[in-house]
Image (cartoon, rainbow, N blue to C red; front, side):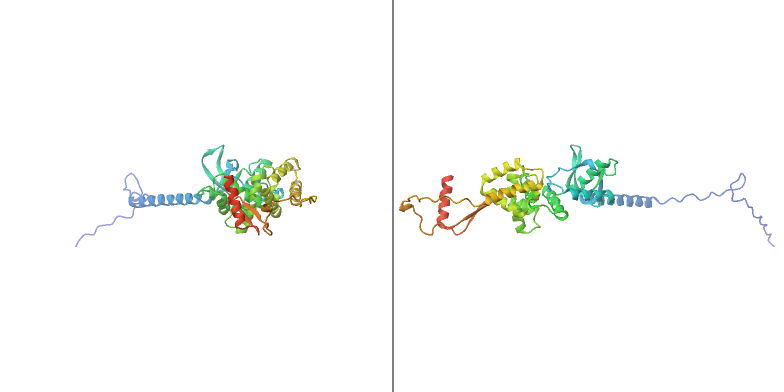
Length: 345
């Protein structure tokens, strides 16, 4: 009969480390396989690159709002379309910004390098920028020292001008004079090849008749912009009358410029009164001449009966065209004009 082996009683400290008893090492931290670690790092890097690309794309497309120092914005990046600000509207805007903060960002373009201390040029949001500057000057505590802005990258200067004009068309309508002025300045600055292209490019969303009225104000800008203090207050009717007089009579322009230079330029109504008086004087019919004996005309030079008829001329500066209409327009007039032009050449 086989002998049975006696079992040793349980030893409580057997698994504990000690001087005599064996010790089992405790399990350490698990180490992931190298391939899993590499995959994790690659995934994190790809996600970071994707996020960076998305942010850069949003910034480039003008979908990323940044907070910029107020003094870093150049307000003269492009010629502004709005000439003056209504003080009541500016006060209301400043009050809203002070109580609710800036709700809508301005639009700016980043300069490749700082220019006269500015890092960005203003495209749209001039009124908000002015209101924030006013608040910062009044309070000076830094609350209004920064501005929320969309940093955009327009394809060219035409896009920048269109963005400015469209915002003002939506937020606060421009006067016909202001529209004509910005179209003329954009053309003179080389942004558009012709004045007609500037009108179509900047105001392509308005009707053709509205663009024609804007074009009618261009001669006023060309002849009177440096002597008018409140041109935005000129009504459509008065502006069209002034434009007609300016194109028809150079002497009217000289006389009106002198009156504006010496008149009451400190008040809107004072300037409008000067313009109204000039138009009334221009449109007043001439005094009748004293009757006198008609001079004798040789029979060969006497006009045929019924040959003298009315004709009206109109000059379009945008098209570079003179239109003559009326009953007096016939082949004889055409030949006479051609003969006169040939003599002037």
